[in-house]
Image 1 (cartoon, rainbow, N blue to C red):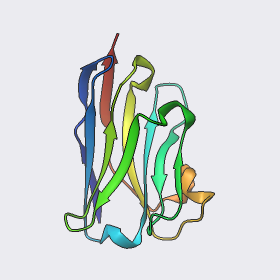
Image 2: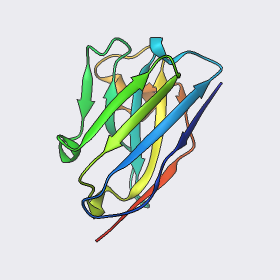
Image 3: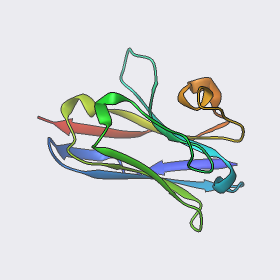
Length: 125
């Protein structure tokens, strides 16, 4: 069972990146999925999450209107499209999957079963 995230990099303020996270060993379509990020010295925070059926979603206020989470079940992959990036978006980004999740638990670090290794996103000013 593995999640592998990629797509991070260095981008200027106002630019865009799309993070991808490929799942292997299990099928994503029955899992809640989420993207989290962590800045050195701070706790990892939930950025954008969506339930398995898409009925429940969560985003932190600072990314609303700029970030979009999605999944492609045929490719067993989840994505995070990030537009209008800002320096404060600089962080290591992690993808995660949860087999059983509630509206509350899918926003929490301990609500997830599987985690990908992080990918660094750096936004220059």
